[in-house]
Length: 599
Image (tube, rainbow, N blue to C red; front, side):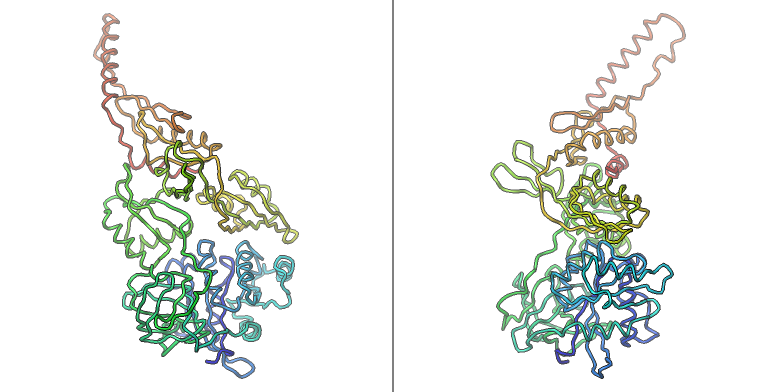
């Protein structure tokens, strides 16, 4: 296919604005599948994607469309994830395109991730075609959405394509706009091979497969390729494209999107954003912008009940073949035993990993409260990353602690503005921007610590706005904060597994919550138990669990009172000795009750 007849584009939108349904209609209209094969969410291949109605893995598909000018065009469409956790995949997908369809729900208008994805497309200098979807619904307000497109995005609202992906309205007009407005790709098939990896997955028969956009050169079976970030070389066993089924081709050439299989055993060798070149005739420079996906949230994964550590390890190793973003390493807990410390891109990524491990690999898990990576400035001037509070050095060995901050964009109806602002202030947010998108909708920007939003922020913001608000966030760097390590003591013995890193202003409230919860859940013993929380050597919260007391005076019927006193003193001495040698075993229930505490 000649370059002037190729169009590469992605569909971007806020979650649940209809990306997958629109992709289905485009596939159907172009005749890529028969009516018998057609099903809803054609490109959502995972059960969990269909159930939740969200796209987790991006999908690329090649379509052929005969336009009104009589020419047949080769369309490469990428259906991207909408959630913030997978924003890096979205940005690399956009690097493989010349244009995007910016999908906006006619009933909801512009949302937080609509704005975030719009600016990603602007940064990549892509042609943006606004598409107003769901115009068939009774609650659709097309004129309001057009005003938002003009006022917020600065685009011409009259160029917006009106569609209903569900009913198939406006699909032909959209395809004509793609052909006319999005420019053909640039590239030279005679130059050395230069291909961008924008996604990967593992096939049990072909090994790890890379989805690529070819910028220059050609690749075919037998080519020896080199991955430029690692220098590893492999021989290509198959090239092809998705139509939407995998279809092998003789070669992929400049301007095209497709897949490369090269018997690569580990998906971690195929890194999103990396450049593939010909090992025998390499390109001089890789495509700029590559960076490895970095986990932002860490949590402990432990086997539950009769499920074993070895079974959990096998499940994680098998799963990680398909998900290069998941990282994990062994750790142990006095209460939960042997397990793993796992790193995730965000909370949704963590939920997806947990659910897929349980469904696809039969794993039975206990997952602890997530935490972020802190950074410590050591006395020698170096920085140390802290993924687990137990790793934090003693205060005399470091100068300060830094925590990750994010820029949070919130779009909410004005009726809930006060509740949203109060919630953000409770989470230590600093307001940076405030503007009305239209008379009834407000956009807010807050800088906030990542640790404050990874536990319950999503639930709370949906609760205070009755589900109408949306939010998006992006990492903006580390900041020095007054952070302390909160330690828990039971009978003067530290329980390191229950250590927390918290802001000093919130340490007392958190300490009170923990000791009160432990008092409720630790069973009473034959001796007193002290439960304390402290910072360094200073105890800031304390509770006492009274001893179980046998009624040693029950056998005394009358007689001298000194006899009862003597028995009680003897019991008291026995309890003192018991307290010296007795140990409190922290049960799994008590441990989990503390980990699940809301801040």
